[in-house]
Picture 1 (cartoon, rainbow, N blue to C red):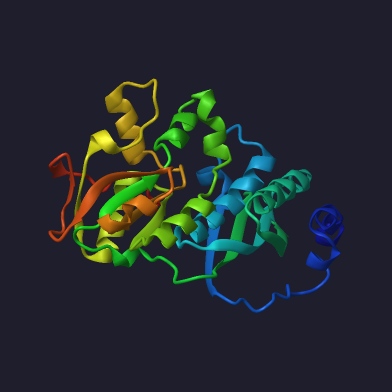
Picture 2 (picture 1 turned 90 degrees about the vertical axis):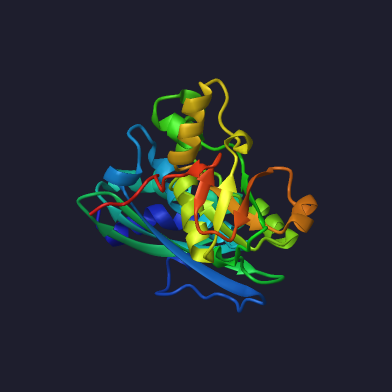
Length: 286
């Protein structure tokens, strides 16, 4: 098939409107728009054994997670697909569409080309209807530090623990939680894609602050030796939970899934149980 013939796979999923024009036509937003884009490659981003449907899901989920980290709701997503084999397209598109529908967004089109390595580029537009987006740079000394969810699930799945396989391949962006945390009064927020430790460093650097974190407060996966589960939580990555800071007076407004793990300090050092926390986690290398 050529690229025009492959549209016969995409159009039944997205509808003719998403396939018939050079651009999607979007209504003017009443709130503040936020935009993010992500590129994923098969050799570096998709674990062996992941299905094509899950690849489509993941491509949209990572961008929706970025939108969630601003306290925004996802509205519209596009997906450019560099396709290595034409028979993979249908399941990828169905997985991408399922993810968008799950989080109330519209998959409005994209691009399609042949490529030697499967490569997906997703772009998302989100909206903050009532207030301002939460950035990484607003943490203040005295704020509390919190996370959503249990840390370390994705790396456990990557290591072969089947009970966490879907956590790895079908990440669940914390859209509702991000909005709730923003409305509660969050001062800074980001998603935890590369591991908790390096994300804490990134957030504190953006805010020009330091912090003190307690390992006993970090929600880790059960049924592992405590040291191992903590190491996976700190350095594993791929969970796409949220890391945030919030004034102490606002803690009662947080959603039930939010867990407080430390406090922001004026001194620019990152401490875990009183010792320096290494800035380790997943890094992209060239």
